[in-house]
Amino acid sequence: MIDRILNSRLAPLLVLAFLVAVIPLVAPSNFYLRVAALVWVFSIAAFGLTILMGYAGQVSLGHAGFLGIGAYSVALGPEYLGLDPLVSLCLGVFVSAAIAWVVGRPILKLRGYYLAIATLGFGMIVSLVLNGESAITGGPDGMQVPRATLFGLKLSGSATWYWVTAGVMLVGAALALNIGNSPTGRALRALHDSEVAAAGTGIDVAARKLNAFVLAAIYAAVAGGLLALMNGLITPDAAGFMNSIELVAMVIIGGLGSVVGAVVGAAFLVVLPQALTSLHDYEQAVLGLLIMVFMIFLPAGIVPTLRRKMTERAA
Image (cartoon, rainbow, N blue to C red; front, top):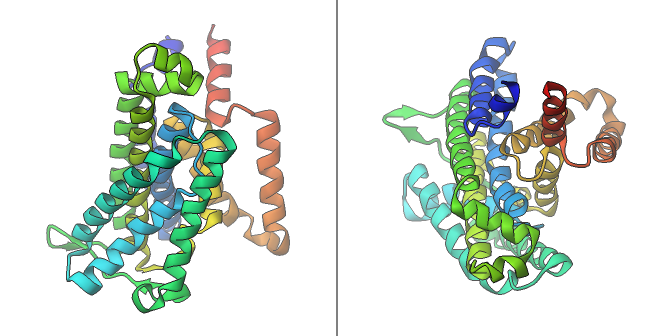
């Protein structure tokens, strides 16, 4: 019975919906709702890398670049085009997808370390442009982001953004799960195992890899736009190298190919630094040590390891 529940397609989505419903009931203040909203935002970006890395087996070390594009779209659109922030977000998602399609065609011909370095270069270019074009982007100081309105309701406050980001996160999770259980997801997993074997079965390897790359860029752009709208300010750090590494770490720590794992990994890297602030100068060292410990003892990731142990115990 437990095994059947664990293997249900709806199980991950039900778990996430349960968490979304329970957290406001136990959160002692709005500060915790804001932290939870940040977890949902970075989970959305991590879902994209779950598709790209977990399903398709393609590494990206520059995906924060797309997050930065989505984030700056909600600032640049209203400032220079007079667009509504939410319309600007949609435009930013479209631009990110178009750039991913153009950039992905040549760099996805690379493999392994070469692909990782190429994507790293893309992320660095975006970060340098956002920093250098100070007349347009505000440079290192960033830009103010106007408040968005939805059906006449101004989106402000931790509680409001908690439910907005949670709703988008659940939709993103449902889409990622649907892709994973579809013929497209099975084709992507075939690429992950062996591109040569996948090509031998008639799968268009180049097209599938490009599709995964574009989807991951869309997820990152949505997350970036929500982050900027929630904070009311955006800086080039959003597209920085460390942000890209953290996104990859979220997916690996939680469990490659696991949608719930992406949320767990995001929670690990968003919540834990908040809990370690009392350690002051040793905060980053302790965080790094904990990541090493998790990778040594849970190499498959937190969620897949726990799921396997629960299944073995049930059997």
